[in-house]
Image 1 (tube, rainbow, N blue to C red):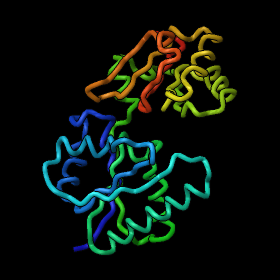
Image 2 (image 1 turned 30 degrees about the vertical axis):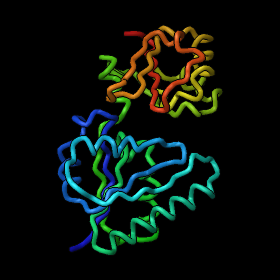
Image 3 (image 1 turned 90 degrees about the vertical axis):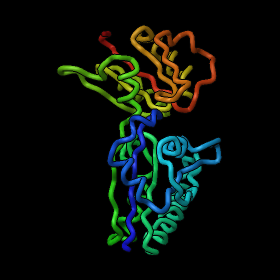
Amino acid sequence: MAGKFYGIGVGPGDPELLTLKAYRVLQEVDVVCVPKSAADRESLALSIINRVIKRQFTTVELSFPMSRDRQILEEHWARAGERVAQLVREGQKVAFVTIGDPMFYSTYGYVRAYLQKNYPDLPVETIPGITAMSACAAALEEPLATGEESLAVIPAAYNLKRLEEVLDRFDNVVLMKVNRYFDRVLELLREKGLTERAALVSRCGHPDQMVSREVTDLAGQKLDYMSILVIHKGGR
């Protein structure tokens, strides 16, 4: 049987947001690859599918360090790519599961690029998933953008000067993974009079989901890694 590599987005946390296609393919694969960093206590993606997929499959952890050193990152992308290529060439169906969407700020994109370059004949299929920002908008009951409004989506680790430029240029802004930089971002929002236009959603779709429209109350608190800040400059 021919092997194949799948990149599967499993959504932001609620297992009911797993797509029908993702569910079907996960019922068929032989191996599930789980991206993990040294800081991970658990794989959120694996915990999601374990709540709905009631069958046995082999789990392979792929290590991706939380580093900004390009050389270190490329070494780990290559190792992951070689492991995936080996499994697929053995005739196995292999899924790389990722929270949210595999083509949106996901390590899957780097592994896929490595395979395209080094194993161009390897069968690959990407299955999209619901993004965390879409789920956060639903949790807030507020659209991310309407009419002619502009929207910027950036990681909070962005240079703060660039973030200031983004806040000035766009009507609405989504800041991904804001936990480590929240207090610095909050200070910038204060300077621009935008604290009342911001809302934070943490661990969206999980049982311990937290939604806060009083973002100033969160100053100095330790926020979860899966935290997103949504800013509507025009209000709602």
